[in-house]
Amino acid sequence: MREILIAVRMTVVTLVLTGLVHPFVVTGVAQAVFPARAGGSLVTDAAGHVVGSALIAQAFTSPRYFQPRPSAAGNGYDATSSGGSNLGPTSQKLRDRIVADVQRLQKDNPEAAGPVPAELVTASASGLDPHLSPEAALWQVPRVARARGRSPAEVKSLVDAAVEGRTFGLLGEPTVNVLRLNLALDRQVGPAPTGRR
Image 1 (cartoon, helix red, strand yellow):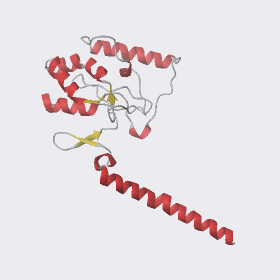
Image 2 (cartoon, helix red, strand yellow; image 1 turned 180 degrees about the horizontal axis):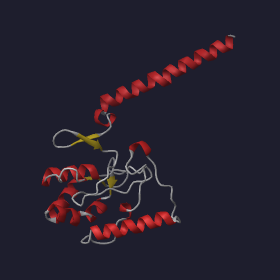
Image 3 (tube, rainbow, N blue to C red; image 1 turned 30 degrees about the horizontal axis):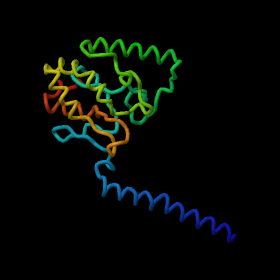
Image 4 (cartoon, rainbow, N blue to C red; image 1 turned 45 degrees about the vertical axis):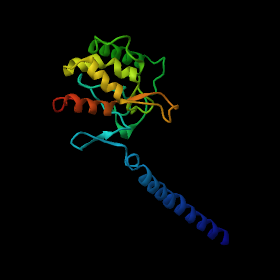
């Protein structure tokens, strides 16, 4: 009986420490030190309305916007169903989708220089990666500039300004957050017609 009481006490103490105290302390410190990140890295538009998270990609299909990587999460960009397609390099289904995506991108971006960047036809492991390389964003500049009636140089300057450097100056590669870039585009040259993203 004594051993059972010790086991019950240890279970209760462990439950309180790891299930209540630790999460509350970590959450409190995060809220105090990194409030925006702890709150979900929410992104607002010019009117102050929350339009998404800087951590989760969204579908942009209008030619007036930069488009992110494709998503295999749920029905696409579904944050409740994060995950890749699990299709390997020998998968015919994956090859067919990539071929169709390359053809669509080439048709939609006739003035783009060079081949279609690989990341524009391959999904990330989570299916929710909100970033592109600067090269993949720059590849889309002629289409966005034409659709917005702006010069490619003007749109390129927005991409250049949106490049996020390496973490601590040495980890990872430079990236561009597609949602933030599209919001900067709307602020600079005006939003797309309502409902056209």
